[in-house]
Image 1: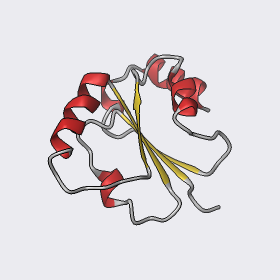
Image 2: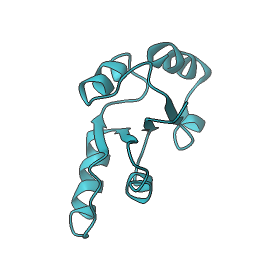
Image 3: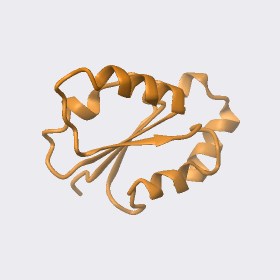
Image 4: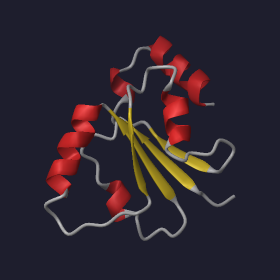
Length: 105
């Protein structure tokens, strides 16, 4: 199946959403703490960048409500999705990783 969604957990200052924006039809979801996403938005607002496919999702990636927050931003379970957890997974315990899998699967 063709990828329709991409979720970047612990997105930080990652700019893949803008670099991959030319990938037609793929919605990009960036999940991170509010202060991180606010900082990023303030810096990027000064640049001539556009990424209509990007959705910022405020939340702690280890909490059980992340799935609901993603859904509220337009994420659709069951759609082919790429999950990127590379920037955050090294900071999580085994139990948090298991919880993440349970909450988002």
